[in-house]
Length: 295
Image (tube, rainbow, N blue to C red):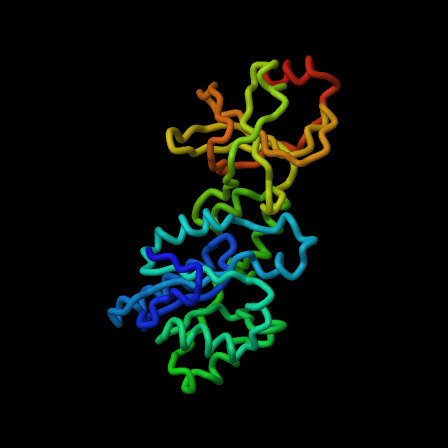
């Protein structure tokens, strides 16, 4: 999979199929768009790729939005590799790019840079300055810019259309079982282990600590997890919250990895959420917390 981070470096002769979207979470709805685009490429024996945006546009326009993402860019890239893309285009979403009109986006990026033959999007796709472009806009300019726009039917659960917004709400409610089904994998938080206050070691319950960064905040509490690194893939138990027993001020993900008792500071791990166990609880003191963890 060839990755382009600058539109000026895109192979102008790709003449292929492109699926466009934020793809935050890469849920089953996103996967449907990508798989259908891939099938079209195989049928026509032409290259197939994905175009996405970084940062997520809503976070660019509103810097007060901090905890929003379902997956990080690194996770998105790794997950997209499984679809065997020929190329991935990551558009830097900045002031200059956001000022492009809908037609300018089609002309300068889709037509001139990619020479796209087939463009796949979801029904609610919006683009261009102030999100003025939509699927009707794409249809309008098909002939002028020599591409065919294909809109995939929404992926639904019952009568509910599956979207990233829908998944964020499920995560916030701690409905991890449902989230994992809609992702077709375990939802995970990926990051570098940071130094904590080592209180866990004092009660025989050492933890690896991760900051949430831009991830959507799940329901505070205790979760069954599986932790993956370069060297292991182990079950564990994680607490996400403010550490009320110790009057913590910042949200932290603390994970005890079963069978691992070594220093993992600065190591990159992925904490895969399997099941919500119970809400966050405040204990009277360290002794009570230790007793609870040993029971």
